[in-house]
Amino acid sequence: MPLNRALTCVALVCTAPVALLAPTSPATARQARADDRLAGLADFVDGVMAEQIASREVAGAVVTVVANGRVLFTRGYGFANVAKQVPVDGQRTLFRPGSVSKLFTWVALTQQIEQGRVDLDADVNRYLDFRIPDFQGAPIRVRDLMSHSPGMSDVGGFITDSPDKLTPYQQWIKAHVPARLWAPGTEIAYSNYGAALAGYIVERVSGEAYPDYVERHIFAPLGMTSTTFREPLPAALAPRMADGHRLVNGQLVPRSFEYLSAIMPAGSATSSAPDMARFMLAILGNGALAGKRILRPESIALLERDSLTNVAGMPGLAHGFLVEREAGPRMIGHAGNTADFHSDLVLAPAQGIGFFISFTGGQGSYVARTELRNALIGRLFPRAPAPRYTGDAPPPPLGAYRANRRDYSRPANPAHDLKVEMPAPHVITVTAEGMKTAYAQIAPDEYEQVTGARAGGPYDRLKFYGGPRDPRLSLASEPYETYHFVKPE
Image (cartoon, rainbow, N blue to C red; front, side, top):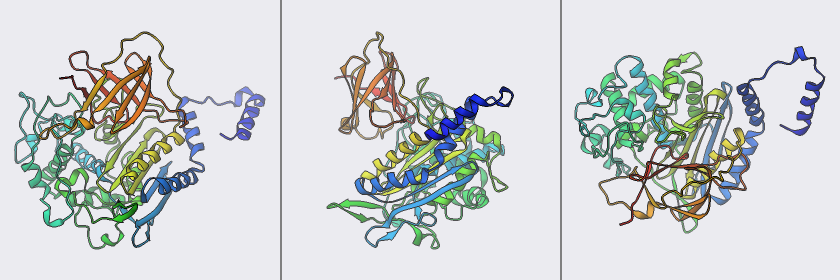
């Protein structure tokens, strides 16, 4: 709040009769502060994007923010095709949201739950025409798909640059059933396969092909006329598509279209920023937009409600949505990455605020996406660092930690492990892909990212758990996976 406005408020409080002072709840106060920070947000984003384009290999991007039931702004930046100098049109240029596409699949599955065709606690095999093996007698339930906890290996090899190499996703998922590794519903490990399976269940129980279903029951009611899961793109949409880019000899060079429809429901969507704004408004509007309803309010509540977390006190999964922050305010959303596009969607339901961003460019544009996401969260919902812990506590197990989200059919690559060290009491460092980050202790088993420059956060957190037989750690920024200690040989 500007100083002069703050002083005016103080003066009013001091002189007003007591009877005129309305009580202000914490939630109301948070909403007022959020509304205050929305002012000037577009200019703030312009400034961040100018720096990103200059320093982060960004070719082009779109940003759209919704608040209080309306679109606050939608803007395009840079070029959809650098070589041809085609500018991004924030209203028309199409981007690939990657795994943000999964949110449409979870909505579609929830529609089938709402209609009584799918039971959250049913064995997924009830709805399939092929069989997913049990793990020690435990079947995968529908709810395990929504919490990314089917206990499966991850899968790869589903992106191609040629439509001639595509396998229909219905065939692909039958030919690539991942290994079952642990009991379902016990440990989160992000699963592209599980989301594709969820889309196939929608197709099976509804009797409609998946791309037809989402068009009829989600996109058409919401007026999302520029969104599709179809590959190649329909002729009417193809000319509006932004190109992926790669950095060659210091220059951004456009790439050919990438095809992901081997796992269609998990990531093959193409959309515009205005369409993504309409989707966010529908979710924030308890399932309805402009008189058209895609879900009942109680179904939206299900999607937003916690389902599973790897350890108490850390963000986990809602039902399909990732939990971005548990409180202050609670935020849910989903990130998405293809080889060429990097996207994120974040919602603060209690505040009625959401944003969607998508970038194309070189490898650095992945970092740019995350930086803008964090800048928006820090601007809209700032928080202070947690108090530092100075008590006595044994050090955590130090060494390498390996993510449980990986393709177990291939040898693990130690280069991708996290390396945890303790250079001083109450401080650990985590090295990931050659980058070292410091975390300060805030509880006996919990640490918070150290940053002296970024006011307002967000500040990542890390927690150790699991006991001496199976030491683990989880990061607040990565609620979709667990890291297990790699015991020295």
